Structure formats: C-alpha cells, structure tokens
View 1 (cartoon, rainbow, N blue to C red):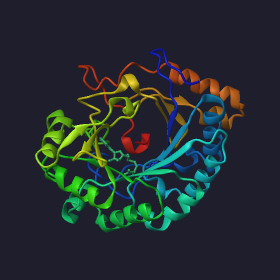
View 2: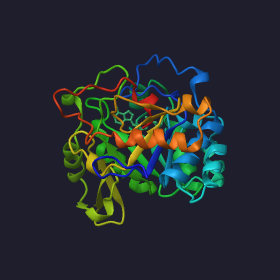
View 3: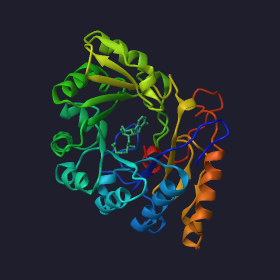
View 4: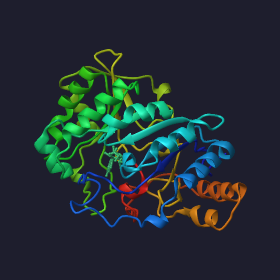
Length: 329
Ligand code: SAM
C-alpha cells in the first residue's frame, strides 16, 4: 500500500506522458512555450509500463490516469493504454486531454481499453480560445469531444478554468453547452502552477463566484456528500438532476485530507502532491538495474513523506519549481 503518515492511502496514479503541449494556455505556460525535457530523460513506453505495473501489482493502485503536457502527442499512447488494461487487477484507465487529435484517436483508445476521459474546454468563443491558448484550435477540441462521446467514452467530462477578464462570463454558457451535449462539466479554480509565476489570488475566479454565477440561471442542489469520496469536485445536481456540475475549489476549498493521488512525471519522478517541492527518482535506479521491490520501496517512502496539505494558503507557500505541464495535471 502507498500509505502516508496522516492515514491517507494513494490508489489513484496520475502519469504524465510528456511535458509538451500544442496549446499555450496562459494559466500553464508562456506564449513562447518552455524548454521541453530532453528526450533521453523521458521514460520509454516500456519503462512507463513497468512502473505502472509495479504500482498496480505491488502498491494497490486501482486507477491510472494518463496526462501531460498533452498525452495525445505521445505516439505510443494506445499501446500504453492496452498494456495497462492487461494488468491484474485491471485498473480503471482514464485520460486528461485538450482534445486536439481525439477525433482520430478516440476510437483506437477506447478499443485499447480506455474507460473514461476528461477534455479541457475553457471557452466556446474562438477569439477567447485564441487569446487564452495562443492557438486557433477550438474547432479541433469540439470535434474531439464529439468523437469521445461517439466512441462511448461516456460520460465525457469537461474541465474548465475561468480567468478574470477573459472567460469568466462563460460560466453559464459552458454549462448550457455541456448539458445540451450530455457532457459533465467541472470548473477548476486556477492554481499557482504556471511557469511564469503569474498567478494572483485576487485574479482567481473562486468556487463561490462560480456557484453564484451558475445559481443565477440554474437550480443547483448539492449531491450526496457520501458519493464524493476522495473526488476533488464538489458536485451539484442541475435542475434536480440527473445532470450534474462539479466545482473543484483547490485553493479556497482544499480537499487534501481526502487526497488519494500520487503522480509520476514523464521523466520518472514520483511526486506525492501537485505542490510537492521534493520528488523521488524512480528512473535512475530503474536504469541502474533496481528490481521491482526496490522501486516499490522508493515509491512507498515517497508517499509516506506526503505533507498534510498543499499549503497554498500558508504565508510561507512557495510554488513548485516544475510548472503544471511538466508535473501532469
Ligand atoms: N493537456 C491536457 C489538458 O489540457 O487537459 C492535460 C494536461 S493539463 C495540465 C490538465 C488540466 O490541468 C487541464 O484541465 C488544465 O485546464 C488544468 N490546469 C492547467 N494549469 C492549471 C492551473 N494553473 N490551475 C488549474 N488548472 C490547471
């Protein structure tokens, strides 16, 4: 088991498959992009498959989510998903993506064993999409969403980050769009994880503001709190249900006490928290011949050292040196 000193057990593994992305969302990276991780430092497909197998077979991981960067840019993704689906006990397999290229890949990924998908969509307006992501790809994202639903990756979940002065007016339109298409929308509070260190608390659109904006147009009823478990989203029934909307108040309503997540970066570092300032290297011992039990031991010690909370609201908070794109969201 991956247990920490506060009684939490990590069962949900988030694996970043690349730090590269084809968008430049301003809450994540600067318009000119970043210096990508050098190829030799990245885990190969076989190395990813081995570490995921160790997580599932020896450490109690029951859900594997592939992310990035943009995971659809990883050529070997369908093969990695297929190898994950062969593990015993078979974990739930999910993907977080910006949706670009999903029109081609949704079917093959579903066939490979992908169970669930989250697609990021922050705006329905092409001009705002361009301002926010510095790319003109809204049409590709919408096509990707439709392809995910057609491939049976349902319910398709949509992640949205609101930014003041940019897309904050789209709270209700985004929900209306998702209700019309049968997608389940979740708003995520913007976190201090951008490479430019440009996050400012006063510019963050809070969970409370999001709920106020939605309540002006929709009747929201809190979903059964028991059903939330370790999920980051507080969920609400819309108009009495069955449709739901989620709000992830990572900053103003932290849920660290129920966290069951652990992360593996594309270059093989275990992170016990999105905001961790220390990492544990699995790649180098693996490349030096460590056996599965030695790697599992490093991983257990990494999770055992997890802090009680992310500390964003502490006066001494320091942003992690890796940006979100290199951690894996
Ligand atoms: N490229 C993929 C995507 O767009 O979904 C996967 C990686 S992305 C880092 C994963 C999620 O993190 C996206 O939904 C994105 O909106 C969210 N995200 C990135 N930076 C964020 C930030 N500073 N605060 C909150 N969410 C963020």
